[in-house]
Amino acid sequence: SQTIHQWPATLVQPVGSPLSLECTVEGTSNPNLYWYRQAAGRGLQLLFYSVGIGQISSEVPQNLSASRPQDRQFILSSKKLLLSDSGFYLCACQDRGRTDTQYFGPGTRLTVL
Amino acid sequence: EDQVTQSPEALRLQEGESSSLNCSYTVSGLRGLFWYRQDPGKGPEFLFTLYSAGEEKEKERLKATLTKKESFLHITAPKPEDSATYLCAVQAIGNQFYFGTGTSLTVIP
Image (cartoon, rainbow over all chains, first blue to last red; front, side):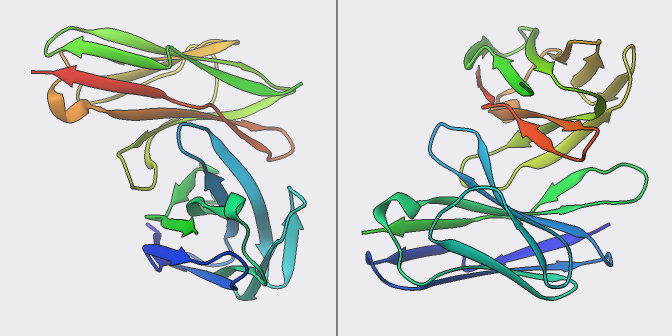
């Protein structure tokens, strides 16, 4: 079964600073990968998904971007953070075999001050 | 419009008091329905996948069921360690995933 790593676990950044969150996956190959944001008391908001290296689809227009430089690596970036970017960021990996289940990483708590 | 609605938003149970969480969905073609458990500050943990109406899955004190319009997560004789937020998600034919906002369960000793 796959294992999803995210880092850092927590991050406090000033407004206007850059951002780079990393997600790596073990135990599977050629997965679909997803970035979600979860605001306090709210549901999961899909930000980006990728079906392969260099293939990124954006679901929400914003100052965030994503890249997939390797098969099992997914990066979420920003050039200038906004206060509204604060939240809990989750990376997910979809098992494209029999179940289609999405499995989640441990998350990154981002606070923008 | 495809969507997922979970109820209640919050549920407090005494230890041993069984209950059910509801997940209602409208989607143009269901590929799968997923239940997750999320503890505070952690990523969702996968519990069950259901594919067709009438299907049931069990794991310890949890049992998930599926109809054509909703799913129930039944919790039998809950313990304090079952306290968490339970999320429901639906996968549509086009591989889109729709998540509910969750039910926050608190089990009181």
